[in-house]
Image (cartoon, rainbow over all chains, first blue to last red; front, side, top):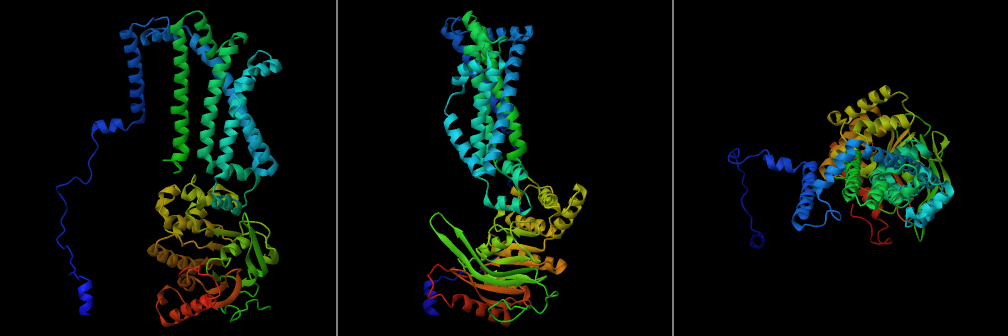
Length: 293
Length: 280
C-alpha cells in the first residue's frame, strides 16, 4: 500500500453544495439588429448585387468610357424600363421561356426513361453510362446545324438542342445519386415489398435527391445558356426572336444600352431561378430531411 | 420430430405450438467479394418457435448476420432450405421485418409517423391512410415517442431512431421480427435501456424475434434461446436456454455461469483460429 501511495496521488472528494445561479452572465441574449439582418440570406446577396451595380455606374462615370461601347447602369436601366413598358421585353422573355420549359420538361422525361431502364437492367445501365460519356462533353449547340436540317428553322430545332443539353446532365447526376443510396435503405424498401418503378420513385429518388437536384440545376443552366446561344447565332432565322435574338439584333444596330438591358434580364432570370425556385425546392426537401445543412 | 440442434437440450419448454415458425435446415450461404467466394455458414440447422426470443450468437466471421439476411430473403442459400410457416423463403417480404444496426434505416424524407405508415401502406398491412395512422400512433406510444411523431429522423438521437425502427417493425406484426445487432451502435447506457424496453414490449405482445448479437451478456439478457455459432464458416455449436434470465439477473450466479459457459464454448477454438476474434 505504501508503495502505491507514492505512485498515485489520492485526492479528497468534494462536492460543490452551494452552487448558486450564475446571475452575472446572460444565459440567453437576443442577437443585435445588425446580426439578425446580416443573417438573412437575401439581404446579403442583394448587397453584393447592389455593390456590383454601384461599381458599374461609378466606373462609367469616372473613366469616361465611350457609352456606345460600355453604357452606364443608369442608361441601361432606362433602356430596360422602356422595353418593359412597351411590352417588348416580356414578349421576348416569353418566347425564350416557352421553348426552354418545353425542352426542359422533355429532357427530364427522356432522362427518366433512360434511368428507369438503367435501374431495372444491367444493359440499360451500360447504355446510359456509354451514352452519357459520349454526349455529355458534346456542346449541345454544335448539334444546332443538324437540328435545323432535320426539324427546320422553327422552335422545334431549339427544343431539340435544349433537350440534348438537359438530358445528359440530369441523367448523369441522377444515376450517381442512385448509386449512392445506402444498402440499408435499399433493403428497407425491398423489405416492405417495393420493387420496379414504385421502388425507384419511393426509395431511390428521394434518397438520391441531393444529387438529382444538382442535376436539375446543372441541366437548367446548360439549357438556358444553350438556348440563348442558339438564338444568338441562328435567332435571325427563326420567326419570332427571344432574348438571345434581342441581344444579337440590338448589337447589330449598335443599340448597346438595349444589349445590356437584355443581358441584364438573362442574368436576372438565371438568378431568380437559382435563388428562388431551386432554393425553395432545396429548403422543402433535402434541407428539411437533414441531407444538406 | 427432428432434433436439429447438435447441441444440448431439445425445444424450449415454453414453446406454445409444436410447429416451428421458422425452420432452417442444412443451410449453406455463400457470398462473393471482388476476389473471393466466401462460405459464410455451412449446413446450419435451427428452428424458431412462436414467441421465441431466439438469439444467434457468435464471434465476427461466424455468418450470423449473413444468416439473418438469408432469412430476410436478401440471399438465397446454396444448399438447404429456409421455411417460414411452411413456405420456402425466396425473396424479401413484409412477413419478415428487419431491424438493422445502422441508424440510416429510417427514410430521412419521412417523419417518424410517416416512416411507420409508409411501411404499413406499402407492406400491404393497411389499405386506408386513417387505419395506418391509428396503427402507427399505437406503436409510437408503445416506444414512448408520442412527442416526436412529426419529427424528421435526422433530429432524433441514435436510441430514438432505433425505437422508431423497432416500432415500424412491430407495427407490421410480422411472423418474425429480425434484428441485426440493433443496439450495437448505441452507447452502453442507452443500450441497457433499449434492452429493457425490448423485453417489456415482448411481455406486452409476445412477438417472435430472431436477434443477432456478438455480446454474450446481451444474448443472455434478451434471448429465451441462444444458438451459438462457430466461425469460418459458421456452424452450429450449441443451442442453450436462457428464458429464465433477464436484466434483474445480471451478476447473479446462474447468469454468470451461463455467460462463462458460452464464453468457454466460443473461445474453445481460439488457439486454432486466428487472433481476429473480438473481445466480448
